[in-house]
Image (cartoon, helix red, strand yellow):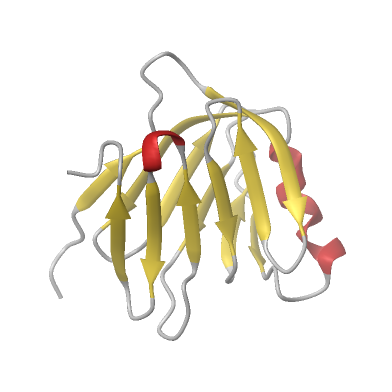
Length: 134
């Protein structure tokens, strides 16, 4: 198996991107001050600043997503999406989220300014359009 290759980085040029909203429906979503909306529809890993790991499923019981809500009012300090459709985000509070691709479904989508759209496609790749995706 070839090593993954980074295809996109979260735009933190002007500093961390503050999280202004966390949403739970049949997905777990965040919206940032910089205008990025991330929607996670499959299982993901949330790691606390102390290193405690939670495997969370947005399609399951909504209250079980509680640990991930602690990123509200934090900021994204780094984020990468790779050619396998995996997304990894680091937050100012020391926590992190990792969203692997799924074999059958779009694991996550990310929308942003200037037509930015990233989609973790079924089977493990990344479709990308717009700003900073060349």
